[in-house]
Image 1 (cartoon, rainbow, N blue to C red):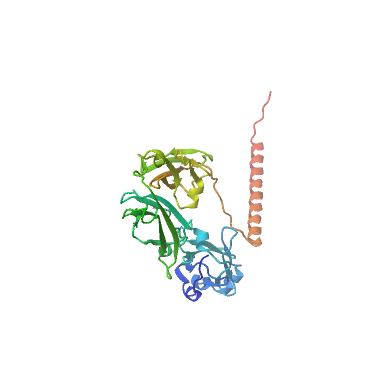
Image 2 (image 1 turned 120 degrees about the vertical axis):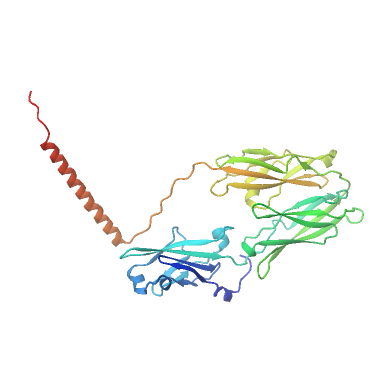
Length: 384
């Protein structure tokens, strides 16, 4: 994780969100130290400590990972293992653990929800340390160049919020909000380039989050100014769509995107690139640089992702480019069996259930014998 938070503030961040008969909710920040107190479950549920001990109280998590434990002598819920919200929930909000406390003699079940809140422990980061462009000095004012944005593992106000570009002698930034909440970042030419005056333009793109303290990430943009290239590539569509079943094999061809460039020679030769910043997209799909054919490079799972948005860039050898989006919808197939979760029981409870089961078996066998005897008594006889 990046950065260290001041834990004196964390100590006052634990909160009891809700308490009702049979259920209780807490809110705690991520990264709390092992042994830290989550809450007093006995007090919040109105139970005495003797009941916790006599009832053999225990926490059931539903899986093998135990982040929170119970001290039956004090009634406190305690951190057993430090929790990283990003590892547990990624971008899902709210992020919560759903637990159960089980007591015996008599058996009681209590529901516990622990919400894990985000702290600003991740700065915005760029995939590359340097971005390079080759742009013709004949590029017209208003020409756009798609930039690969930063990513921030945090959520809410601690997530990526804004960008800045310096200096602004030739270029300005434009941000475009996407349906999925991301922002597309474009560098727009506002003053013509002059190769004879400046052959290389160096810019700094900075991404900021909204946390306190604010964290940031920087990438350098190197623009090499080329001689005359009068026309940029233009995609035949700004948005392409494709449908993919989740059992599609690696190598499956989804679609071919196409861009044309009115120039001749090298300046009219178009190459294609996947410009999406997410690693999962860049690893799942590949594009033929020369034909624009998009191919599946992995195995999709509808239960993990039912929708992909792929940003694609077409660039000519003069450095001009255009961009489009490919929307891929994944169709579900029936590839998951129902899962039944069973709660563990103590030996005393198991013995009681076994005894009841055996008694029911004996009674059923006795009734079956009585029916058989009755059948023998009423059976008619035949005389030949």
